[in-house]
Amino acid sequence: MAFILISGMTCSGKTTLEGELVKNGFQKLITSTTRDLRPNEENGVHYHFLNSDQFERELASNNIIEHNTYNGHKYGISRKELFKHVQSETDTVIVLDPSGVKKMQSYMSANKIPHISVFISADIGVVVSRLTDRLESNSLSKSEFISRVTNISLNEVNWYKDAMKSHTYDLIMESVDQDSVSFLLSHIKRTKFI
Image 1 (cartoon, rainbow, N blue to C red):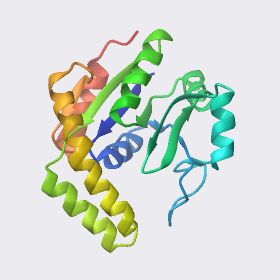
Image 2: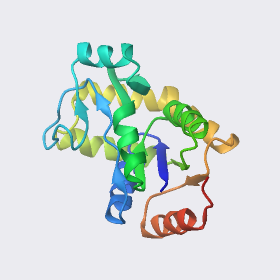
Image 3: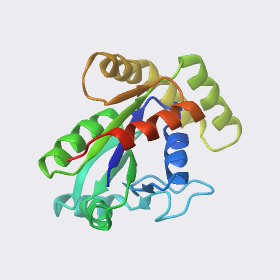
Image 4: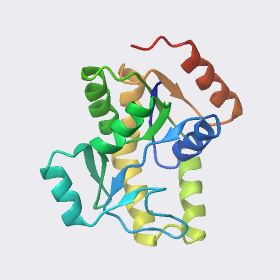
C-alpha cells in the first residue's frame, strides 16, 4: 500500500496523472470542498461537497486533517476518508497544493503511512492555453479564469521554484505523458515503503 501525493501548477496535468494512476489500479481519495458542484461533477465521486457550516463543524471536530482555501473555497482531507484507504490497504492517489503536500507528508510520516510525493511543472504558456480552453468550454467562469491567472503569476511560479530547490518532493515531472506515467509506476514499484 502506498499513497501518491500529487501537486503542481494549475493545469499542469495533476488530474490527468491521477486518472492514469486510477487506470493502473490506484484508488482516488475524495477530498471535501465548499465550492459549488460544476457541470459533470458528482458528489462523493469528484469531491465531498459541503456547505461552509458543515466544513467548519468537521474542522472544529478535528475530522479534517489538512485544509486550505483556494479561490475563496475551502478544501480538505477528512480523517475518515484517509483511514478508509489505510484500512483497505489500497494504493491511493491524492491531489493537493504544495502546502497540503507538506502537511500530509508530516502527518503520514508521524503515522507511518507510506507515501511518495510528485510535483508536476508546466510551461506558463501551456497553462494559460489550457485555462483558456476551460474558459471557452464554459467549465471555468471569467472571474475564476482571472483569479487563476493572477494566482499563477503571484504564487505558482514560487511553488515551482520551491519544488526545484527543496527536498519536499520525491519526483518532479516536467509533463504528464505515457512515458512519465510509466516511469512513475516503475519508481513506485521499486520504492521500499515503511
